[in-house]
Image 1 (tube, one colour):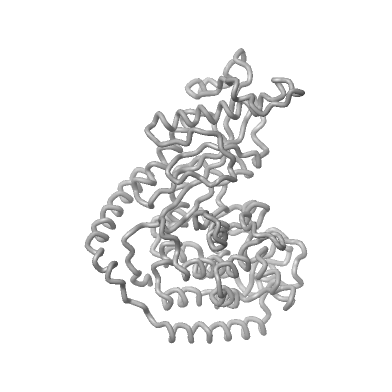
Image 2: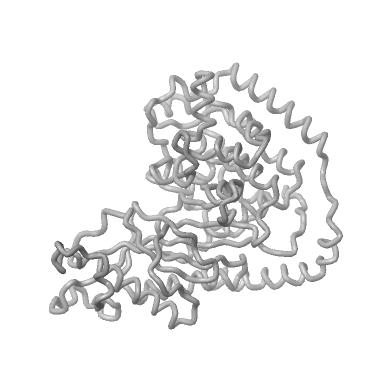
Length: 452
């Protein structure tokens, strides 16, 4: 049953990063291969500045793929600007800090395997501004996505992604929220994984917390078994600082502080904790590339909804939610023995008594729950190297780990109780907040009808 949540006088903020390929024809004399492409921009004009950076030893034709990318980015910027949106006007490296108030069009040279055929392709990233999470902001995302899809020949493949950053306005998250977010993502990673294809599980650019995090690998190295999920939850809840939390949860190279390539990227929070002037956001990197506004909006609603629930819920509510993983007895490893384990132990928790649909419903995210009802998948996990000697939690591990974790959870619940107090400023803002909430509800209801 969903518990009452603490009221906040402001919504969370979010930003979207789209990766996609843009089709073009190199030669103006080439006829359009498909009649239905006649309404799309497929020919782009380069200018002298597009060839900046060309070596004196390179022929102009050799440098053309770089020049045409600049021409395509300029065209996309102009298209977004002419539709009434604010757009960054200069070339920018994707590693630079984004302008929070502007749409930006950037290179993405990490993408590959574009569709062979009559067109040539270049890879582009489009970043939205940092928006407050409102119906109007979601409509802006939809409008720009549809505009680009209708204007250009776009395509996505398995190397491309839809990344969503979530932040707490200019305020930054309080000290408890990042801890609770990490504990939540660890606890319910199997449920969240069921929304993504096998290729999006624990891969190069979005490592799994349970598979690739320093905590999970260190625990297996020291104990020879995988940590029980509730043991992991309590480990993260007991971290003493934000940096300790992130260093334990996000994959990074030894001795470095590069946490970007995790499914849940806390690099912004790590930079902020180290005094680097970056936005303290969490980036959700696992979603496949998509040109579907319906898929994009529901994923945005899901990840923003998760973070919003966690920042508002009291400790008692969160700890009771985490205790649901007590019933998790084993994990899929894709090592050829999962069928035998399932026959012995029954389906995993995320595919039986507490699926992603149950989780989203528990959080009050009924729109995404309805959208994903027939879209979530049961997938074998890809084998990892080295494969552990055993993937199931032995009876001793289940009994010992679950009992110890349950006792600690019970102690923390009894100590913390339910915090129902509100700062006076929050109380004074209640009437404005109720008005804002009703306006947002109306906007979202209207948007849901449009999407349907």
